[in-house]
Length: 478
Image (cartoon, rainbow, N blue to C red; front, side):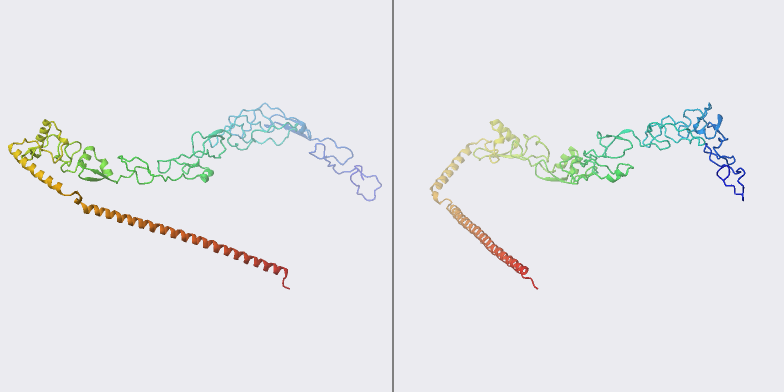
């Protein structure tokens, strides 16, 4: 081995006086960046002769240090401003800083980026940062407790954390809930839906649900959306023009169809009944209705002061001028011997003078006793009285037993026959009921007897089957 103690001499037969080693050392120096360039030697290598230049980011301020000591050095301080353009959205608004080594300091401004919901991000700027200078790494410092930042640089904004009032599925007033804006979950307030139905008159009585008509981009609402119930109630609208007939259709939107029900209206005098369609009669004015109800004939109502009918055409209300009846009335004396024709209004005036009311006089006696009797009326009245006296005496001679005998007998015979027939019918009905009851009792007794016999036979048969099975189990076939 040569003097270096690492390499052999490799000469032929040598007396031991070998020359010094001529190879390069090549050991790793203490800087751990280069190898020793000196010839192979014993002992420690000399320090690294290379000098390392440390400069700021812009390169204006620098100094040299021996190789291997650059990690223990601090970067030089530069008074010029940093020329690295920031990559976040606050590029022009960010605060300027001096030239430095390594990564630029984080942006201290608010993110202020607008969400799709029109809110803005209120966190510190978390946009991308420019990469640090890779030529020089600072000496590692002692670890400090990690304070988790609100967001990692270069990541998008987190979901919107604003609190908003979110309505329920049915958009009911007063049923809102305070929720995070990014939380799109929907809820039901458990109240009645209350949305107007397709009929336009009633409201949905289901619990709060999402409507199909609501425009929303969320898939959850489209899945949970359901239609309101259908209205099956009858129509309860007031018809126009107003009438007392209800609409025959079920509950529907819009106006009801015209009423085609036939309406009966009697004329004013009561002699005729008119039939109109309800819509036609109600669309008429009062005057037209009065003209339509009139039968066009003479009034058939009786005048209040006499026995005659109204001479006017059929009209509403009371008859005009009932005291001025112009019809001729046959007027007689008290004994009905004299007679004369007079206007009805004069007869009424005569009754009023006599102190009697013409309303209380019947039709057969109207006009009787108006004329005064003369001398001829007295002689005639005597003859009439004699004839009446003779008639009464003849009537008294007839026995009272012979008056209407056949009618009474017929009634008695008819009553006796009806009594006999009613008794026979009652006896026949009771016999029928007795027969029905007896047959029911016989059938019930027969059913009970045969049912009991059948049950006993069934139990005996089942016992025989069980005995046969036991016999087979005891003596099986070989």
